[in-house]
Image (cartoon, rainbow, N blue to C red; front, side):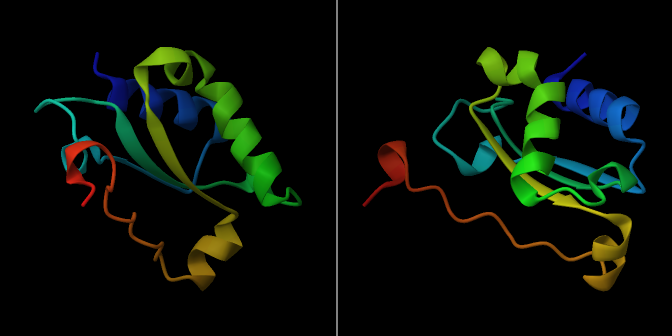
Length: 105
């Protein structure tokens, strides 16, 4: 199983989201082709109701602690309640361009 599939499975099991999108953004970074090291997660779940942003991120980080301990280098999180997700009409910001490694100029 690949890392992206593991992330999706764990987040679905932990949060029963109304929306989940996991995007492998590794190709936008200075890593070998086919890498799975940089991800963007957009998740909308009732589990985030009443939680501040830092609390939501801590919950996701706890579920993905094994991956974050070595397999994932970067994780961009967009954690929303279902109401927030629908208010935004399913839009979240794009990730900024990579400025690390040889791409810095």
